[in-house]
Length: 491
Image (cartoon, rainbow, N blue to C red; front, side):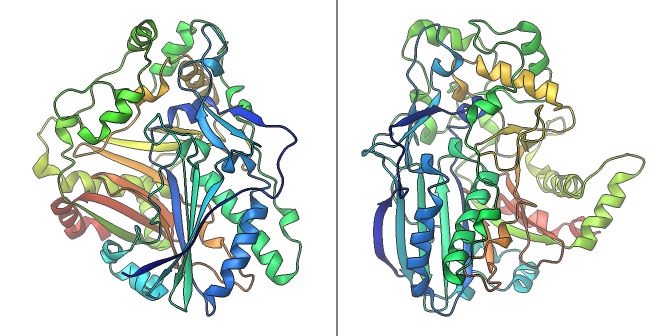
C-alpha cells in the first residue's frame, strides 16, 4: 500500500504553566511501564477528508490544554535512599512546562485506498471473522519513533504520545493514537478522544458543548492515597502483604532468564534491574516464580480473528451461565464461553494435567474506597479475577506494590498455550467519537495490539445492535479449530 507522509511535527499545548511541573505517577502506573502502549485507530467515511486535517490539528492542540502532561517528558523519578515511596527505584515521572518538552508527535499520511478497503461495513465484518487479517494496522500508525521508556531506559527527547491522521483516498480518514501505558489505559484514551472530538465539533458547528464534559483529573496521588497502611514506611506491613498475596494474582519474574526466555525481551529485562547490588538483592527477596517460557513459542504463526456476538446471543449466554448464581454479567458469560472454546481448541497442545489461566485486566476506579471518578486519568489496572478484589483487597495490593523495589520485575499475566490475556474496551463509548457534528460515527474502531498467542480484546460493535466484538489472536492452527467448533455458536 502506497503511503505518502504529508506532515511530521511535534505539538504542544497552546499555553504552558508559569513554571515546570514534575509529577510522579501512581503506584499502579509504575507497574505497567513495561506493558505495550495503549492505542487505537478510528476509521471514518468523509467526502472531503483533506479539509478535516486543519480542524483536527487545531482541535487536538486545544485538547492538550486539558492533558498538558501528554506533551511532557516521561522519565524516571530521582531515587533517594530511605525517601518516600515516590523516590524508590524506577518510579515513572512526567515533567512538563519546559521549552525542552518533547511534545506529541503528529503525523499526517496519505494512503491510496478507501475506508471500505481498510474496513468493510459492519454487517460484512460480522459475517467474516477473518477479514481482520487484512486490516492495515501498521500503515495507519507508521511512525518509527520510540516512546519514552520503551526499553525502560531511553527517554530524553522521546514523546509519550504519537498521533497519525491518515487520509484514505478522497473518501475518508483514520485517526490513530498510541501512548506509553503508564500515562493512561483505554479508559483514559477514550476520555481524551471524546474531548478532542467534542472540541472539533464545536469548531465546525460554532457551538460550545465541550464545556459540558467533565474536566479530566490528573492526580496520581488520589490513587496512591487509597493504599492501606503506610506506603512511605521503610518496610511493608506483613499482614497487608499477606492479604494482597492471598489473592489470585500471578507473580511471574521477568528477571528469570531460564531456557525459553525471549531474546527480544532481554534489553528491557536488563534495564529493569537496579545497578546497586544491595538494592538488587532486596528486590530479589520479593517472591516470584519463573515464567513458563516452554509453553509459549513466540516463533509460531499467529492469526487474528474478529468474532461478533449479537445481543440475543449474549443474553442467552448470560441466562445459561446464571443458573442459581446471583450475579453474572454479559461480559462474564461471554468470556467464560470464549475461554472454554479456546481451551478445547488447545487440547492437542496440552497435557492432561496442565493448568490453564484466564488473565483478566480489571479496572480499579470503582474498586477503591472512596471510588475514583470516571474522568480520572492513568492506568489503574490489575490482572486476573474479579469479586475477591474488594476495596480492602485493592488497598492491600496498592500497599504491597508500593513497597516493591522494582515494580517492573513482576508480570501479572502471560501468553502462549496455557494463558489467555483479556482486556475489555466494552462500554467505553469508542463508537461515539464524532469529529464532524453531523452524526459521522466511526466505520470501525480498532484496538492496537501486537498479535501474540492468547491475546483477547472485547470491543463494542460497529453494528450498534447491542452486541460485542471479540478480537482474538491464537496460534494459527488453534484458531482454525476454535472457529470450527460447533459449540462456538450454540447460543
